[in-house]
Image (tube, rainbow, N blue to C red; front, top):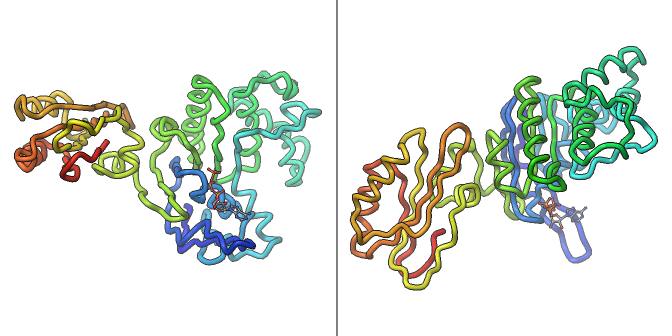
Length: 332
Ligand SMILES: Nc1ncnc2c1ncn2[C@@H]1O[C@H](COP(=O)(O)OP(=O)(O)OP(=O)(O)O)[C@@H](O)[C@H]1O
């Protein structure tokens, strides 16, 4: 559905070139929600702008729904952009227009006839749960309702892809959950492909089917959510299934272990840990619900001499263990 190949974007600046994207290869499967995470400046927004065609890559290709948009001339790009809807953190609605007229706007621009427009707008407002607010004005809506209008407007031209740039970061917890529920619902009902930029691990856990971590314009880790969280010691496993900090002082050798209840029940994992004996201490742990299973992450404090045995026994019990570096370093 979305194919990025060797995508590179360099911004020239008086202090030297800024490499925002440095050779990104990425596939986003049709009908999935794909999270893009990474620190500020990692290149997330640049990636989204390349997907919309607003930004021309310095090198590489961007293919959306079979069309290589990075090669298109400007005029054809304008039509191709209708295949991509965008939702931002702050919804820019036209205050003087009703909700219905805001959602109708992209249809007017696309030249859709008035009668067809009215039917489509009603359908879109129903889809986002605002069927009864068509005549309201933006000032009369809550932040979450405005975001729903933004989503309806983004879907007006029946895009194959919905690009979401931090759409929930200005919303409270409950409203965020409702908007994330709506995004999943749209994926299921419309089969739309969603690319979702976020800073929040909980948003990825609740919404994404797959996730990509960017750092300095490069892909550090990418894959199905269930897969990346069980890659013990990986940055996405640690970020998405966090455990409380382990103070380094007084520790012996730390062993990190991960399991999924898809393969090992928590009771079996705990029994394996208990079987290691009183000399092995659990210093931090969590069990996080994720995609219909639960993911457990444990940090064990182990006598140096027992480390190999602990690793072997945890592995035999179906956990993925990773001994930390010898010495006092943290692995949490
Ligand atoms: N128009 C531009 N001109 C010059 N440099 C830019 C431009 N846009 C982005 N950059 C630089 O490219 C790099 C990636 O920026 P980008 O905005 O894509 O990161 P980001 O991951 O979206 O960050 P944030 O989470 O803070 O929005 C940064 O070093 C940024 O300063």
